[in-house]
Length: 111
Image 1 (cartoon, one colour):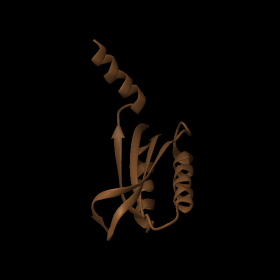
Image 2: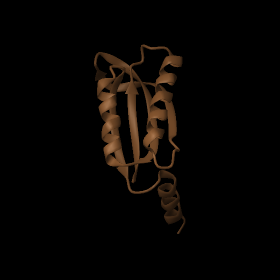
Image 3: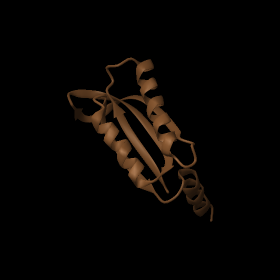
Image 4: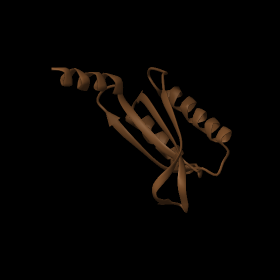
């Protein structure tokens, strides 16, 4: 199992409550296959896009940090492709947990 970070951009035309419910639904889905059952979710809210995506100039951002197998991430991405509310997404594999990586970087700066 490896650590992954997934960023998704949702359709901003829905209400904020509906978008948060959708984010929670994806969080529960990730928990079903995540080894640690802990999913760190960062609801970043609505932001202006750098370029127009499907005729939208804003998008609702959410970031998930979790530990999973690569096949599970493929299934999650397949689910994103099917969902019309997801404008864009990207999943990045990380060798270690984000917090431990940040701690290591700060410890190098102190030396």
